[in-house]
Image (cartoon, rainbow, N blue to C red; front, side, top):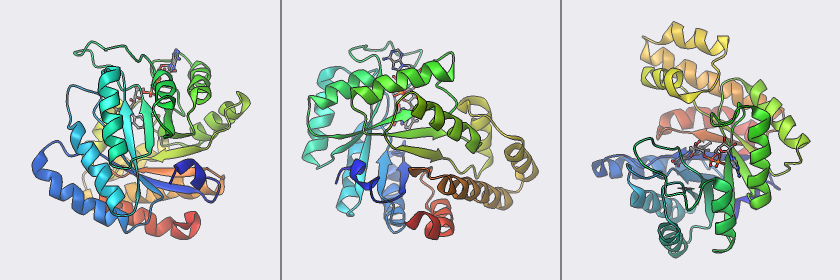
Length: 286
Ligand code: FAD
């Protein structure tokens, strides 16, 4: 089933997982997938290495496993470090496995890896995908603007290029202040972007994640978020519960504001996904 069709029926509720770095953890991710599957998400997306590191074939294995559980898999596909031939190989493998939903991405530019540049932007990949089969195509969007863009407005203008190239729906970068999402959604609508937009929610439930948020993520950290994280950073159980509660609060507010969908960055943590899913079940209708 193509994901674009689900948006007509309900608030889409989806999960994201990533392939473990070591192949010894494969059994763990398969067990996690089984637990996530029980939570009845509309789809589960699988991240894919932009090249240089990571295990790309494992991403396909995981997507295939999701499909065999009766769930819709979405394969992330970054393009900046891949040739057309390599992209074709991945697409052929995806087709063989019955994967028909792709999240088309540029990928982060790694200063140690010169970009291949057969595809410069996600929009180039989207146009290419259109010639390669009947894929449902998702693309990424950034409520606070992508760091490569000088302004949010410039980024949304570029987002329009992606949508006009054929993106069927969008999944947002994580954010901790819903007002950024609403502001972005209004601007996108004003610019004529009318495909469904899922809100990306990352429950922050451990100290390592907080440190990563502060140094790399670029998302604004509202006072309420900082206060909670500072208060509980040295109490793992309290921090986990506070992070879950914060994410639930965001989801409830987004659902009340008619968000088209919620995309949960699960960080392969089925306990956290379960707590959030149970809390919002009656609201999202999972
Ligand atoms: P683009 O859409 O190409 O945008 C990048 C920058 O270029 C932006 O500033 C944009 O405004 C500008 N731009 C876009 N199109 C044009 C154009 N036609 N002309 C001029 N400027 C333009 N990375 C991975 O490596 N693997 C993953 O699995 C992965 N999953 C992700 C999932 C989600 C939901 C999100 C939000 C991000 C994910 N990323 C992943 C990270 C993503 O690859 C990076 O954020 C990357 O820097 C940008 O990717 P993009 O597809 O948004 O790029």
